[in-house]
Image 1 (cartoon, one colour):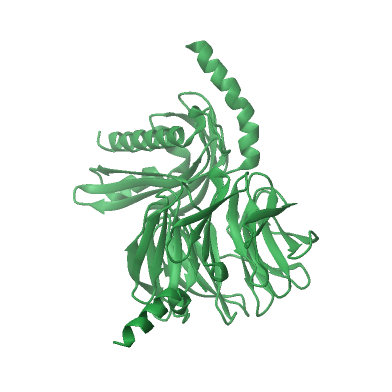
Image 2 (tube, rainbow over the protein chains, first blue to last red):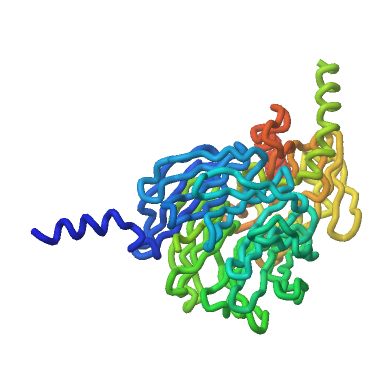
Length: 311
Length: 174
């Protein structure tokens, strides 16, 4: 009889089980889904406000942020109940988001106003609006180095901004139409996928120099880095593939078939699996990285755009 | 009625400038996914599909094709207007071609960007051809007029794909 209250207590501290959770947005289907990688199932799916694109998970505030570019707003969803708790009206077309692990702030790119929005995640207020290049898309942060990286899709550049002050450190030329960015904290490299010329620009964030121009495949989209910084992964939307790169040699170490038009990729907690959402197929591919192939696929609501881990 | 069309055309002219600088991605990407079965062998169908400069030979909505360079075609539509498309890949093993919109013309086709793949696969009766892709509405702002919104884009792209597949079938099943 004593056991019951203990179980109940665990239930109200969901952070315990969150490391295996991934959150998925479906833009056309207006849904937020929870993928439990332990049981390999979608354990929760709720309808949200129209057109959610990107997802950011804020454990310290028990909040999930969804961007709705076509509505000029962000939704703040309760991490546990999945209920809408707040809306932040930003105006413009808020797109990609990144949380600052050192400070209560969320950086959001604004596609139509060529701006970087700064949201205070405690007060849920828009506190700053900084000018960046044209049609800013992907965003990443170096929380220790206090730098924010923004891909300016129409300017073919990445801007490095200060995470604490409204300063611009550098503007670096990339391939054509840079879309997503990922920061490797181990070697300080930034990976930028360039959709139009099928390239991936590697930038050294210490020197702000472009150090390589790689060829991952056709229409590279989402990119992510392994926890140890030794590999990075790119999905190619027009090839229907996942490509693994060695972060040291910058060589492709394997190419794995996905379903149609993969959009976003994340790794499992133990780094043994890749989870990929496929925009055209409306599915989640479970990839076994050791076997080098897709082992299963789970249907998703229409138009999946982003998968984000809880950690 | 003519006056109405003129007015709409003028309005869209102004938007050409706007949408080409704003590009896609803010709005929700839309899809086209059409299929047809053709009573002809895969190799025969593939020959037609793969001839990037010969679209006018089988697509009923296409007046003519002018090649700008080896992988870029200017498609003149029978309804008027030109769109420029660029070939991304031609995979003879997979019987697949992929191409994208290089230069939009929202008066001719109310979309700001697309990538399209045409694939030929064997079927019981010969071949199955799929025409699929992703695209964005012509006005990528948050308040598109009716003729430049998602619905208009889906309608135009779906009709163009359907007509194309039917034309391809007709040209092979003579």
